[in-house]
Image (cartoon, rainbow, N blue to C red; front, side):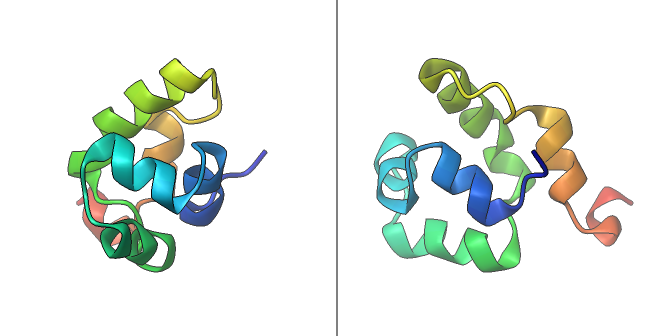
Length: 72
């Protein structure tokens, strides 16, 4: 399965579930679907994925979603 920011958030239970789990505003998570998931949130998302048994959400998968300029 090829992840996108949208499918990653959906795999973790959706916008509201991720918002509550991470303690961030709902509109912030909604923005990630369009603009990408910030790197400083990856560890929290990987932990959440482990709790939910979502094995496809890994640091490597999230890094692959990052724009090329963010990797520089």
